[in-house]
Length: 188
Image (cartoon, rainbow, N blue to C red; front, side, top):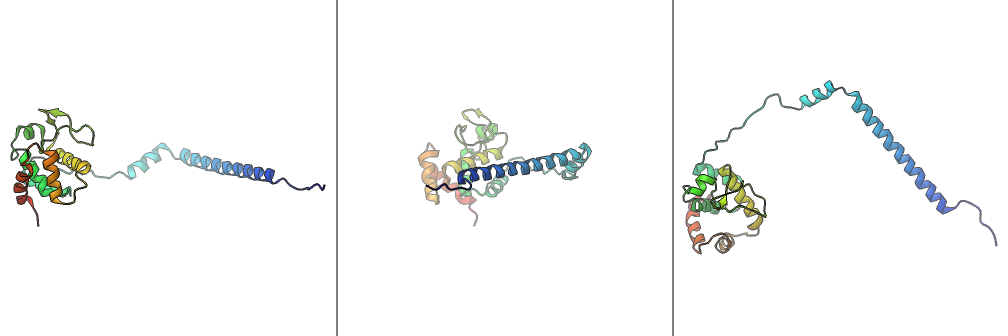
């Protein structure tokens, strides 16, 4: 039986791995040291100057007219790019009693929405059994959130109206009323 002399392949692999670990640790320590040195060399005054340099020199306040008008509602709904905006606008008019209902006036709730419990919402609580909002625009956003969760799969107006009759409204004539009103909000 002949004895083979030479290096042990297992031991060589172990040594190679250990050398690479040590090498990687040394590189990491050098990088940490350089990072700390650079950070410590910057004075608080320099840090403040760097912070100020990225802030705008002038501040602008964009004012949005927050008063409600039907024109502002139409513009806002179309700006949100919701599906079937003419139907959404018709629902707002119908649900808010032509923008005169107590729920709309007290709660800023255009859609007669109830307080959402299991989906994202902008409502701030409940008043008179309906969701309450700080601003009428929040109720529009909340309806858009509702639509994103429950109405996203409907590709046609017919599917949308069918859902409204079966799930959104109490009256079986709801979609018929909404259809009638929606015609005036359609944009060509």
